[in-house]
View 1 (cartoon, helix red, strand yellow):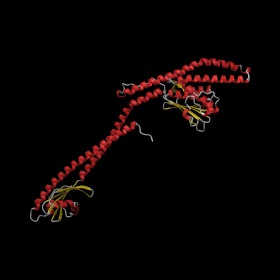
View 2: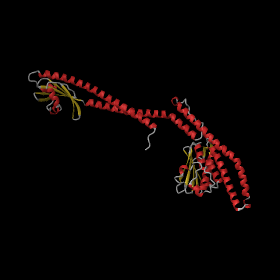
View 3: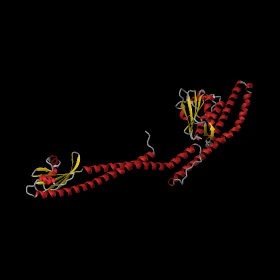
View 4: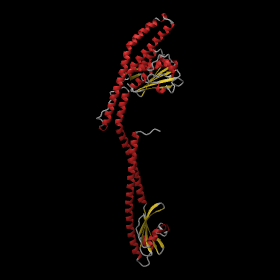
Length: 450
């Protein structure tokens, strides 16, 4: 399983942190609000109960008091209900006091029976309720049952609002984390673009140390590394070019001498004629190797892009290599922004490779999609073995088909040149299995849209 990226981890971290902080704040705020509202509600209910109890006490001072009539004089509103226990008998404002007396907890009754005022919160039929007990005498206790349903609804609404706020805070934290991740990774994006430009041969790309003062040391180290790398690559390129150039003169002399020997082969004995043929073939192969080394050394430079008709280039190469031009398939616009010389070299090397080792070319496909160009050359050969695919584009590497079918004239640099030209265009070269058999060499080129 692929691990999440740094940007995703930063975003998740901000979101989780914001959610935890907002959740803690929401819980603390809810508890404080709940305690405050309950305390205020209890104080109000107790004050109202004592007021009503004073009215009942005044009514009970009369001779032969009518308890039900006394309770009916109390204005308890819709949320409060009055009930009284006198001489172990329960009285209420209406005739049925069974439900009300059952709502009074036994612990509260014992507490009130001992002559102490008390308050207890309970639930009646799922509704939070407050019961207040006020002893009026040794045989009389006044109770008020106060429903807290409205307060419960208020607290539920507060909890919902705090939950929504916590969720919104988490979303804001995620947005801030995403922005912070993008902002923090912006210098790394510039490093990535610079590295991509350098890998494509544009060694002049550098980072500006002043753009991010906190990363000035990193930018300076990166630029120094690029300078050292560019100097070494240029030194190697010049060495290969100088060696190849210096070899051309003696090779021309050897080629001229070999040509003389080749023309006089019919006058030589059999062994001398065979030796002359071998010398001629090896000198020609040596010349191709030197030319390919020169091309490879020049391929390390950046691509010089111009608008070019790639279909016309493909037809031109097919004619030169004696391949039916009808095998060229074009998808999309034929005008690509590429280095025409390099693209022509790519087509030439792939087609010659298919002719030498792949049993001939079956299709040359040119595709332009979303600004990226694709060149595909299919052959009718045995394909490329899975073990050979990772290294087939390396220098001086020849696949099994080359050893089995070729005449030994290849230099092992043709596909390496193709890969180098692809990298100069910000692309890559790969080899696939062609449906139906054979190999499919694919070259991706970036930035081809005109």
